[in-house]
Each structure stands twice: as structure tokens, then as C-alpha cells.
Image (cartoon, rainbow, N blue to C red; front, side, top):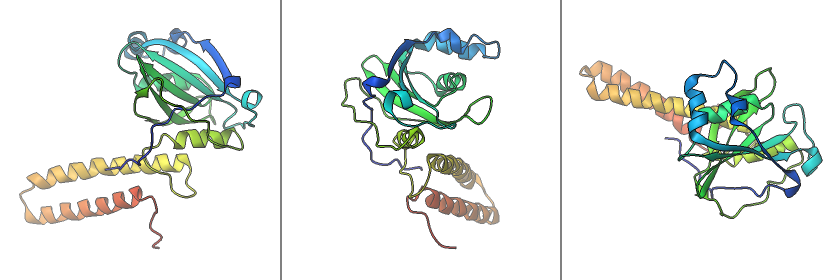
Length: 231
């Protein structure tokens, strides 16, 4: 399986100068006709309040933005129940044309979540969501990562959420693709193991073991923090 790195769950101390503090009506994210009824009900049933809490931008934290990362928004999602789904976060993400870092707050605990967002089209493209574990709402917060501009700050914020360490020189996008491939291999390995347990024919068992070994080797390579340099 994809082994998580040993990290301390992180919450950041967002700069006071970047405080925005604007409540956003839930209806903004599901009032359009193309939103499924089931998703609309999740907004109504699962979310108490959405707050646009911070705006990380050149005019608030003195870091230059680009067309790919013009600003970084921090949204606080207060839940009615235990949690909110990635589907709900994605619906919010697709509506706001800036990268977003979410803080999901439930009673006295909080978690940080985000997915890499690409702004090169009319509709933002959202990658896989990653999250910290739940933490106490009053847990210590650390300063923002040191960064030269907003894109490098965004990379650092996303990297702190990944369940595995990034490799030397690897971008968050590349690490996400690697993790997605590893999870696909895990599903294939599980399916092969199930087939192997019930396959009665010896020659077929041999072929299944070969396929299984091939995928296990590929998975080990993908999850190794220092990839093989063999040509």
C-alpha cells in the first residue's frame, strides 16, 4: 500500500493582513441548474457556514502572483455533522477561479484539505484532494512556508498535505500523478490476489503470479522516495 510519511498534522497561522472574513452564501455553489439534487442536499444538510477567511495575494502578503496562481484563498467550512465530502469541496473549488485551501471545522476539531487546481481553462480542473488528520481547534499553528512568490507558496502548502514525501525535484502535480498511479496498481494487485485464490488451473495460477509480481515491483518503485536510476 502507499505508506504515509511520518509528519505532524499541520495547521498554518494565516497572516492577519490577509484576513478577509466574508461569509459566502451556500446557495452560490448550488443555485445553478446543472448541480445534482443529491449534491445540493449535501450543501444544505452538511454545511453550517462557509467563510472566505483569508486572501493571500500581493497586496496582503507581498508575494507576487502569476496567471497560474494569481491569489490563494482560504475558505473555512463549518459543518453541521461530522464532516463534508470531497464532492462538496470540489463544487466550491470549481466555482471560485482561484486556488483554495480549505479548513473544515467540526465542533472542536479542524482539518486542512486542498486539491491542486489548474486555471488554464474556462472551468478550473481539480486534482485529487488531500487532507490532514483531524486536530484540536486550538492546536498550535505554524508560520507559512518560506516562499519567493505565490506559486511556490501554493506548492509548499499542497506538499504539506501529501501522504508521502515528494522526491527531490518533484512537483506536487508529479507527486499526485505518482500517487494516483500507485493507487491504481493497488486495486489491480487486490483483484489479482482475489483471482489467484480461486483459480484452479496451474498454468493460469503461474500467469497470475507473474502479473502480480510485475505490479508489486512497479508499486514498490512508485512508492520509493528515491526512484531507481537503472536504465
